[in-house]
Structures are given as structure tokens and as C-alpha cells.
Amino acid sequence: MNDIVDHIARLAERLGALLVEQRLVLATAESCTAGGIGFAVTQVAGSSGWYDRGFIVYSNEAKQQVLGVSPVYLRDFGAVSEPVARAMAFGALTHSQAQIAVAVTGIAGPGGGTLDKPVGTVCFAWAIKRDPAAAPWVKTATRRFEGDRAAVRTQAIVAALEGLISLLEQRQDV
Image (cartoon, rainbow, N blue to C red; front, side):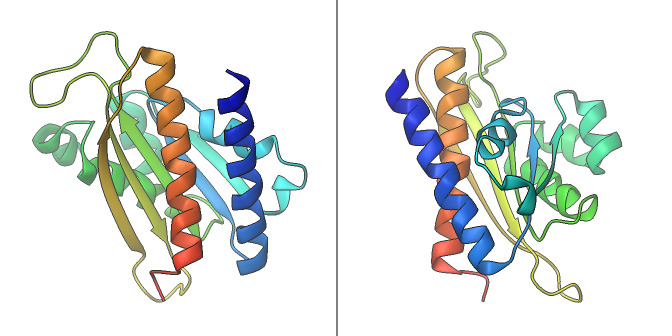
């Protein structure tokens, strides 16, 4: 278990260095990870300089009330979907001082899965807004993780951090 904790800590440190270098501030919008990403990044000393806030929106009502996710998206696509993850990321940018956000929504299990969306399905969105006059750039992805509830959540945290690092290293939005 220490290996994964160390890996997450290294990812969080790398993310913080990139955010400082690019003068960006992060917000997180988390459902199935329930604040795990925010916890990981705030383990880094100095994170208050590059992490604005985290939104834990576990219920559909919270996604709507806190982040402005459309009930139509929830009805048509389901809470575990790329459109909802995208809306969560946009909501995190809208309701914070951040220029970059990650959103995570998924089925950690052991129940709740379906044939279309089995346990371990996690949807991500990474959004960045460098220009206040332009729409945010966003990338979405769906992953399927193996293991128990804790393993799915841990893998989702790692994937979210790796996605942020990749976005900042590649500067795909520029």
C-alpha cells in the first residue's frame, strides 16, 4: 500500500510544480473519489498557492445545486457519463478562482453497476481556461478499473492526477 501512497504523493508534487510554473490554480469536482484528489494535492506543502477548492458532489442533487449540472444531462446520460463529467469540470471552473479543473464521477462498487456501466467505470473531464474571454478547453475519458471499492477509487485518483500532469506537460490547449 505504501507504494501507491508514495506514487500519489509524487504525482501531486509534480502537478504542483507544473501549476506553479504555469501560474495556474486548480479546482476539483469529485463524486466517486469523495475528495481523494483534493486530499492528495493538499498533502503537498505550499498547495494553497495553486489549489483553490474542491467540490464533493456525491448525489445528483449536489451536482446540480453546487456545480450547475443540468438535470437533462443526468437523465439522458446518467451521473456516470462523460457529458456529466464535462459539466462538473465546467462548474468547478465557474464556481472557483481556478483556471484548470478535473472532474471524476464513477461506480466504485460493490453495487450500482449495470451491463453498460459495470462497477469500476469512471468518467473524467479535465478542463482548462487560460483566456477569460474564451470557452474552456476540455478533454474527457472513460476508464474501467478492476478491484474492490478502495482500489477503484485509488486508481481514479491516480488517473485524475496523471491526466492533469499530461495536460500541463503537453499544453494541448495552446
